[in-house]
Length: 126
Image (cartoon, rainbow, N blue to C red):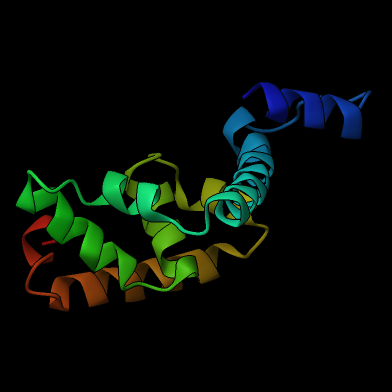
């Protein structure tokens, strides 16, 4: 979070917030997280730590869901997580990703259709 605030203060010194804070912060946090992840991957040579977080070995239910989500494209997974984990509205997701609300709805529809068709994830997305 500290890096995000530093980045935003450096980029927008006279910034006035005119929309939801989440809508403004999400793209910055996303891009900084991606950059940090790439840097960590170069340093460690892989993403094993992230895999362990997504699919804990002692619990099959979270790993089933994590596997189903991992089979989605990045854009589909992103809108599902923003909608159901971050609890953002369609308009907030559209603003955060700089895409039309119709595109968000389409991605969400297709992602949920794929998840409902996956036997391992079906019970989570009825």
